[in-house]
Length: 197
Image 1 (tube, helix red, strand yellow):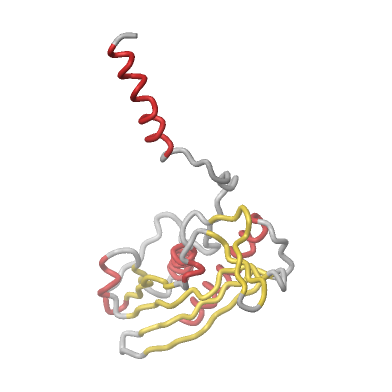
Image 2 (cartoon, rainbow, N blue to C red; image 1 turned 180 degrees about the horizontal axis):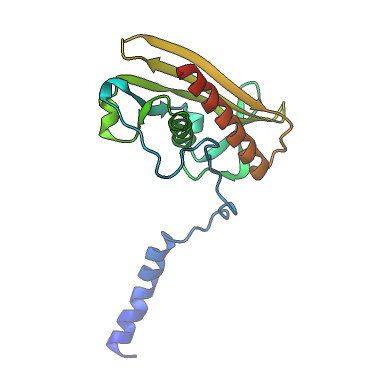
């Protein structure tokens, strides 16, 4: 055996070890990822303009630890919590909900909406809050979305309000739960848009 061949054979275990970090030997990924899409969206080419004094910013939406993951929580009663099998979000739920909320507010056209840019910090009115639930409730066979909104208006007034939407009769499978959560999220976003005015 030549020296170069022996060196190559010696490197094989190292190559295999380095590749093991790239290959998952765990469970298979789900066949598809869940997403939230706004049912109210502005048409391509739509414009809006104004000043910082008339702008509304949607700031980072917070979420508890159970939603700071890509999985769908299943409330099983009491203090028990599990995650729905084969259900995985494309992004964290708070980020998806923030986008649905912003798209819904933008489609209403009542405000110059700024989000996701440095301009949001100069807006005179700010909408934020906590996405408290984007869960599947096993005891009710229901998808639940709950949002605690905080609105700071240009005159410095602070308003808070809890919004919730529930879609009943949902089977505990990824596709119907994802569709029901999308429906509930859009309902909450529409209610928030009505509240903001």
